Image 1 (cartoon, rainbow over the protein chains, first blue to last red):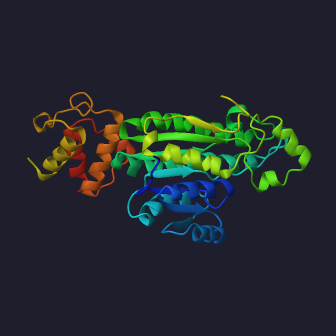
Image 2: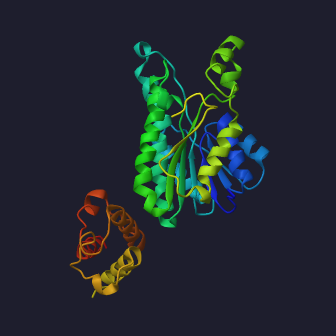
Length: 246
Length: 77
């Protein structure tokens, strides 16, 4: 089950915490990857760690021209086909609404939502021709629940969910599924920086009693990417230890 | 029948899975050949590839019949 041998995938934000776990999960199931990120050194180091014939593609997701070029570059690097697109890259520029600057809003929407749209639009073309495709976007629990200080981030993540539902309906007849994975609190450099009191406060809200791991997200992506998930589209799979049941 | 017409009709038959006799020049993709809006997008993509032309969105929107497609492609070649 969930064998991805012979399949190719583009993963954005691939050298980050969750992105690298997604890449490892897909690679472990046999997929060949185009790893995209903004930091070439980190990306190359991760590709070397991953081994195999995976490619790296540096891309600044706030640059629309670069974003539009990324899928064609990935298709070429992956030998002419793209089965799976994982929109994982995301940024935060947290601020209370009264203090939020225009560029804090615009940057987050541009990288988290607009880049996901541009990549999905570009990927839909080869996927339609192939009559097969998997578009998986990493959203967030806060896209559904909201979170103070994250109006921009929550809006971008909710936007991804709405976009995916629309694309799911447009593309279902061509064998393309479009889904989201919504992580809750996942162990990362960001959560490691929290003090014990902050961590304790978070954990009281998580019935599972622990933070999630990147692998928990990777496994969800692997499932949605698989042939076995072909009848699942327009859905958001929440991976959050029970902190929000939606 | 022109060479363009032959090639256009071949693509329409392949993409829409309809019988060749039904693909007359007057046939409307949507009303006569059962195409939906996504089929039209795919047909336009296939025409672009086959003939090496670019069909912009505003032109694509006006292509309703087989003849419309043939005429547009001929005008660009």
